[in-house]
Image 1: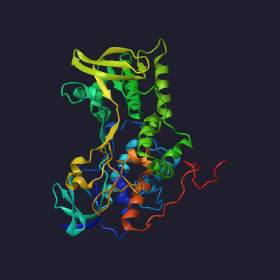
Image 2: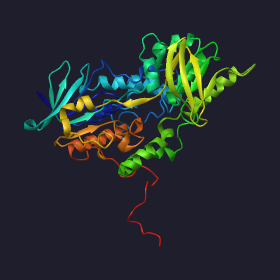
Image 3: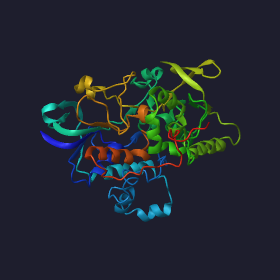
Image 4: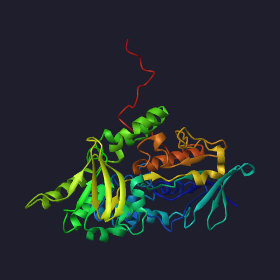
Length: 431
């Protein structure tokens, strides 16, 4: 079997960042596998005009190594678009451009192997390495492994029978572009979900449908709220805050995380303004018939004469029945379960009381075997709301590479925020 120093499972943005930062490290032999034929980033939501919610500096490498040949600016240069980007003065590039940038980077990295799914992982004592079973290829050995298997669409229990029914126009927003023409033509559409994806779907339907009288937007959150974007507020997406969050007791972390929903489930203020502008335009001559209702959860769903949703208002405690021809569940994403992949490690994988992976500050899964196993974007419960944020991707990948190499191959500053999170216990206490 071919032996590598480091193997990656999944090639989304975070493991692609790992591959890009590992590329100039001659001391490491690296390979990454992904079952997909090529890099794609949320293809069902590449709507015209949709932009990243982070600046272009949050690419695969720049916040760790701005001189890397895999940077977004070098992508623009090689595409002959650097001057147009300069004149465009766009700090947040189009989402479709980021998708293209990812494919450009992956095509330059020989460590990336698409079309091969890792189906099993186990530790081999005599080899002092992990063995990875790879669909369509020979097994490989790796001294260290990084799981970057990403997320998958999350659908609330009441809506699952609808979304998985073949003859019902009900879908997760991840598949929006596939069904866009049907949704535009549908007699009525209900969008469920208060985050950025839901807002972008609502905005697109407001602009594309001839009438908005049968468009309804429901959200479980108490308001259609903007994402936190103040400069000090954004420091909760720094490594300083990540370290602070990881140091909190597990029970405190579990209580804190749901209260931080506006950090990662809010809506870009510009998108909210565009929705309001479109509704205002539609109000000329009379109020538009679109209905936007926060504080509502879907408690049941059935089909018959269209789709019937049972609704409950969280604050009022009232209930209602709503009929619609189509449903878009913009209900976010959940971490892809790692249980099947890690089954070969058996009881060596340490888990907490809620059966979640126990993950150290350096993103290492606690194992009862000597080999290091790391995760990317599977540690929100231990590292906080920054886990899925693109802005922390390069930092985390560099931290993992430093751990694998046993020395700082990337210099990561000790301080990254003006805010001091928590009390310094060595400070003199007040009397």
